[in-house]
Length: 147
Image (tube, rainbow, N blue to C red; front, side, top):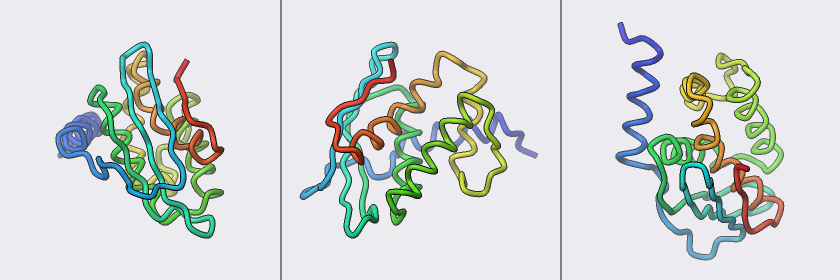
């Protein structure tokens, strides 16, 4: 039987090799750039919102495997959510990695596998970069860093 660490590694590798929603959204209504100076990760996040709902979300850029996998998983998780739901999910994911949030919270879905990042404190900023960029985009900011 696969243990949680194996699943963590498998998901990271899969989403790094084949990132979902790795593209530019033509006609995006919200965008933000993200930068992690510790690791060198850079991404541009774009969203299309309609009536307060995230209809599409995608990212471009380059980064480490954790950063890319997290962005891939995040884009899958945010599609179809309201802005308020996205904010709640941001808070739950942030707590999961920084304050020992509940990895069994059903709201996290596939994102819970990234709880394994907690074992590598220096990599937490890699995993949350895309989330800071998403929050910045939703708030009308054009950039976010993990400093």
